[in-house]
Amino acid sequence: MIALITGASSGLGRAFAKILAKRGFDLVITARRRPRLIELKQELTEDYGVRVKVLPHDLSKPEECMELFEEVEHAKIDILINNAGFGVFGKFTETDLDRELEMIDVNVKAVHILTKLFLQKFVKRGHGYILNTASLAGFMAGPWFSSYYASKNYVLQLTKAIYEELRADKSNVYIGAFCPGPVRTEFNDVAGADFAVEGIDEMEAAEYAIDKMFDGQLIIVPKMYAKLTAAAAKLAPTKLMLAATAKVQSSRVRREPEMPVPVNTGADMKLRLSDEELESAVAGMYDDIREINELNYTDDNNGTNGGNENE
Image 1 (cartoon, helix red, strand yellow):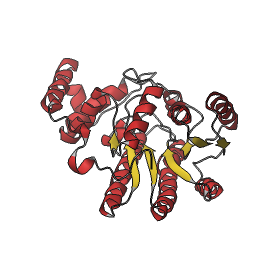
Image 2: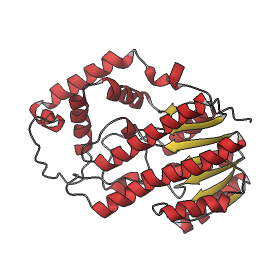
Image 3: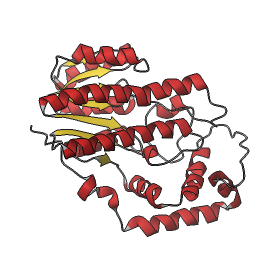
Image 4: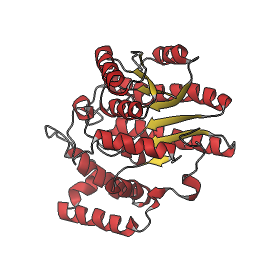
C-alpha cells in the first residue's frame, strides 16, 4: 500500500510518515522544503526499507495541488493524509491579511482540492482512506486565533458531510478528521504563539490517529481533556465557551497586546468574571458532561465505511 502525506517535512506529517513506514507502507511525501523531505526519505529507507517518493510542492497555490495529483494520478495511492497547515495568531484587526489568505489557501483550499480529486478516484476504485488533519479548534471559535479556528471548522464540517454521503452510498471508502489538541511540533513557531497547555507527543498523536483511521472512526480526538473540550464546545453556552477559549488563547501571547473589548460579548464576560469564577464555571461544565463520554462517537458518528487495514 502507498500513502501520500502532505506537510511531511516536520511535525505531525513527519510523524505520520515514520509510523506508516514502520508498518511497511511505501510513501509519497510532499511539502515546500525539499531538503527536509530528502533527509526524511533517507531516514525512512534506511530504517524501514520502504520506497519513498519526494514531491516538493507549495500547496498554498491551487495549481500546485493539481500538479501533485497529476504526478501521482496513475500510482496506486491507498491513503491520503491531508496534514499540511499552519496558523496565524493575533487580534483579527492586526494580523497580516496576506499571511491569513495564504493560510486559508493551505488549510482550506488545498484540503478541499486534494480531498475531492482523490475521493473521486477512490470511489471509482471502491476503496481508499482519506484522513484530514483538523484540530480541536474545529469544534469552536477562537478569539485571537480566529482565522485558524475558522479554517479547521471548515475541514471538520466538510469531512463529516462527505462521510455521510459515503455512508449513504454504502461506500467502502473511508474519510475521517483527526482533531488533536496542542501537539509538540513547530506549529507555534510559525503561528507566533506559545502553548497555553503542554502539547502531547507528536508520535503518540500520529500513531493514535492511524490506529483509529484503520478502525473506521469518523472523528479522532486523542486525550481525555481534548475529548471533554470537544464535548463542551457542543453543549456549553456560546458566550461561556468564547470566554473560556479567549482566556486560553490570550495566555499564548508572547507579548501581552492591548485588546479593547466591546461590551456584551463573550470576551467582555472574561473581564467581568474573576479567574476563580471562570475556572469554576468551566470545571462545573466539564463535570456535567463527563458522563456523556460522547467522544466514542457511537451510533451515527462511528461508522465503519472505511473497511479494515488488510483490504
